[in-house]
Image (cartoon, rainbow, N blue to C red; front, side, top):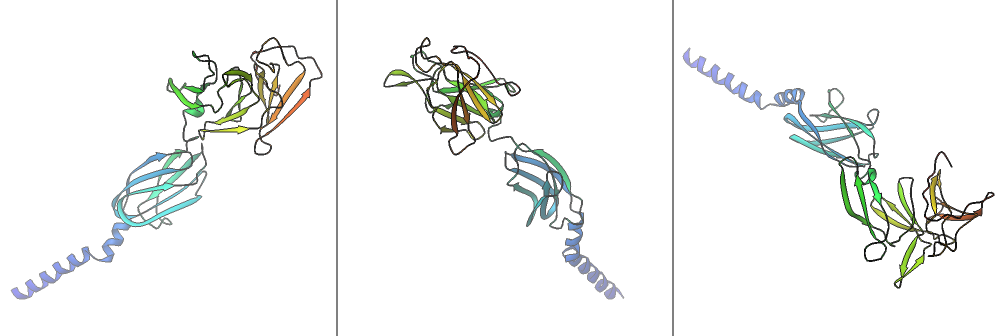
Length: 285
């Protein structure tokens, strides 16, 4: 009788040990695995990295989208900690993601997390106030461009440098880019009126040279109106008292062709001779 009890006890013990390592126990762990922590560990304008921890080693999954489920990513590797980078996102956009401790997302409740992609790789640049051009202590045009971040109250000196340093240039913000047009540049140590058009994209931190103006202009009044840039007044020479622009209006279409298109026409009303004056575009005017 004692031998029979020992044999039965050993069989039961062996049965429970085998059950702990059986596929049934793995199924139970998969069904009960929970997300214990989820974080957005890295963020950019086009991507986001989401990391999360599971209560046991399981595959990981994430679904995400702007207003609903638009895409999914699945890792078949069993692990307690998962990290996935979501690519090809829209910049400056709100997203919602749900993470799972399973490769099967059909019957499980995920843990949601919301995030917003950056407006650019350089968010402080795209909200900054920029200082462009001028003449330095050495009497040369300043190439260094600084900007101020009002959110953090921080100055960033020499954030970029203009390809062609200029003073008295026509500078305007148009379609989230900075256009530097005309002005005075130094050639062989002598100041000359410039026709150059250069544009800076703070989102990409890139400069591009566009089409030259038909006629040099420095100290004009520049404005962004709709899809176009307008310049009135100013002067075509280095002398502020000669070469002043009267009734001619210069209009630039940056979106036409690879380098934009300039057009000049005569105003039906008189434009008074003015140089180095301030101006802006307001409600289409």
